[in-house]
Every structure is written in structure tokens, then in C-alpha cells.
Length: 395
Image (tube, rainbow, N blue to C red; front, side, top):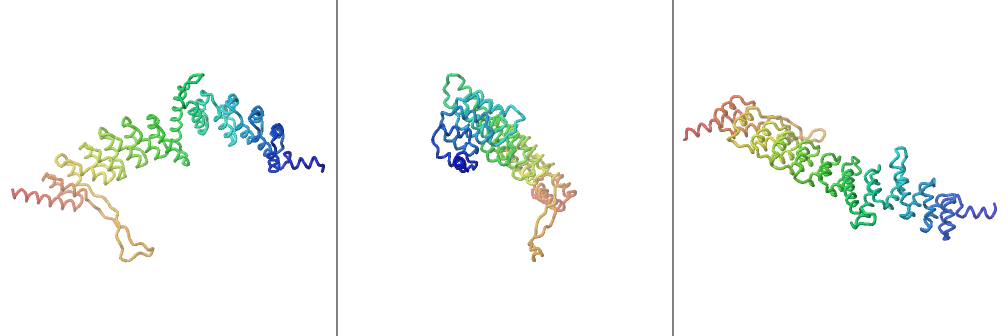
């Protein structure tokens, strides 16, 4: 092997990436580095050369960005371009976002992100911030637009204040998109996005449609009192009890019917209690006491009823109210599986007996004493009748 060939194998022309890159690292001559950046056989040598070239080689960087088959080298060259290449930046970003056929890669995404970071065209940045396919690119364009309009002082081409407003609107839309994300890996990000949202209409949209329940809860908390319809909808229909409770807290006293619907249809004790606390309408409370699917809701509504107005309802509850309760009892000797309790079932009529205590109409008590479905209730009604009779004789 000849001496020149040996030098070739040991220097920047080597096919060994690490050896060639190491050789280039020792070169300082800019002209030679430019030659290596174009001609070295291994991409590592070319990458090292590009990194060592100074800013005077803009034409070479642009040529690599446009034409080089290596996406890694295009990324490195893009980093070295100055802001004078606005047309090239626009071509790179628009080329992907305007074509449904371009196959995307991680390196191409990096190239586009570098291009967006160097853009100064406010209209183009606004367009990318609104329409780019990738959320990260929309975010980067909005961030860039915010940066170049941050001082609020009009520039020579005009429209700086206008685009500052556009940037803020796009930012709010981006936050909304993030908040609604159905990607579970982005849940923390979606919650953070809601915290930064200020647009009330967009917050209402998040409250209704975000996949993340904490994002919905956060959005409801930030909505002002005008959004009663959103609160009522969430209180009745949201799958998360914490969102429902947040919505109930925001409902005002004029939405008694909505609160009653929540109390009747909810199977969660805490949600039902939160709704009933805010109900003052006696007719609606009576409906909850009679028809709620949640036992605790019926109790809480019953306790708020006016005794003088609801004698007929108390009689109805006393006649028909009892339910099957599943409880546990301790065993003297643990079972073979080591368990110390076993389930047992019994019927209880506590609400029915409580209704008897509120009954003061003797004729209704007499009906209950005769016809109540549960023996405990019949006995309680008989006792109450006897007490009333005793009181009447005493008088």
C-alpha cells in the first residue's frame, strides 16, 4: 500500500467514522474544512467539519440543507444558517405541511423546528402557528412570534402590535388543544395548559371536552359565573365525581332544578350531599327524598323537609320505604381461608320509621299502622298514635 493511501486511511478521508472525525477535529483551515464538509466519505467527518466552519460559509450551509441526502447533516447545517435565509426556511416548513404525501422522520422534524426558530416573517409564523400538522411546530411558531412581538413597539413593516394579539390568540388555541389531548402521557401537560388559559370561551370548551378529568375540573374552576349552563351540564353528566362537585360549587341558587336532578340521579354520596346542601325549594326536596337513587341523598333531602307541608309524603315513605342492606358480622372462629368476617343481609326501614316521627296527622298514622310493608314501621306508627291519643286525653 502506498504512503498516500496510508495517509488517506488515517485522515479525514478514512471510511472509519471515529478516526475521520478525530482527524477533522485537529484541522483549523476554513478552506480545507469546507472541502471536507462537501467531500468526506464518512458523515461523521462532514458533521465535524460543518460544526467547525464559521458563519462566512452560508452558501455551503444552505446547499447542504437543500440537497444533502443525509438528514443529520442537514440538521447541523440548518443550525449554522443565519436569518437571511427566510425563503429557504419557509420552503422547508411549508413543503411538509402542504403535502399529504411527505413521509416524516425525526430528523426532518428537527430541521423544521430549527427553521421556525430562525424565522422573522410574522405572517408566516402566524400561519404555521395556526395550521401546522405537528403541535410542537405550532407551539414553536407561536413562541417565536411572541418573542419577536414582545416589546409591543411598531416596527418598519408595521403590524407588530397586531401580530402580538394574533400570537396571544394562537397561544390560547394551542393551550386548548393541549388541554383536550387524549394522550395519557400528556396529562400533566394538559393540566398545566389549563392553568395558563385565560379565554373564557376556550375554557368552557375544555370543561366540556377535555379527556383529562383534572383538566376539566381546573377549567370549571376558572370559569366565571356566566357559564351556568356548562356547570349544570357537568354536574349532571361528567363521569368524574370531582368534576361534578366542582360544577355544583359553581352553580348559583337559581338552578334549583338542575341541582335536584343531580341529587336524584347520582349514586355518589358526596356529590348528592353537595347538591342537596344548595337546594332550598321544598317541592324539589320532596322529589329527591322520594325518588333519588342514592340512599344518603334521600335521607339528606328528607331532613330538610318542612313537616307541615309534607305529611302525605311522610306517609308514603312510611308505607313503602325499606331496603336490603348488606353488612358483616364477626365470627368466633376464623374460617379455613383465614377470614374473620362473613356477610349477612337484613332489611331495614330507618327512613320509614323516621317518616313516622314527622307524621302528626292521626288519619295518616292509622293507615301506616295498618298497611306499612315493614313491621318496624307499623309498630312505630301504632306507638305514635298511642302517644297522640295520650296527649289528647291529657289536654
